[in-house]
Length: 107
Image (cartoon, rainbow, N blue to C red; front, side):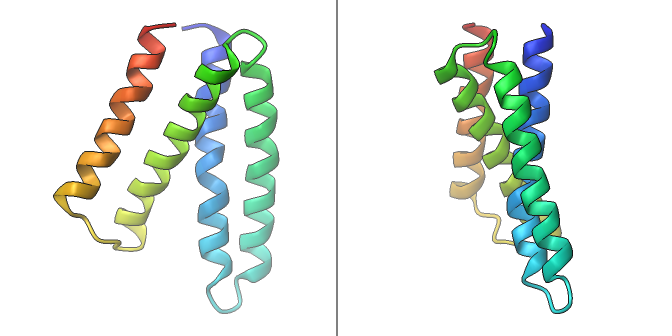
């Protein structure tokens, strides 16, 4: 795996951080910490995506970045916030994950 793909995975992980920070900011007394986490994650995610796009085509990088962020956020919602886990929702997330894997294999 090239360094660019490592940057892209890191970017995707930070992409999960901002919706998590926004969710945390909704809890009483957690607004500031949640917003700092969200904004910091947004910035770091963008920086690592920028680094990845130096070697990975923009469309591939963006799709993988949003896929990691979307599936990761979905998983955290299930685990941390007990969001509904239905066959349809899990299948949709797995299809997105399969698409991310195919994009990597096709690069």
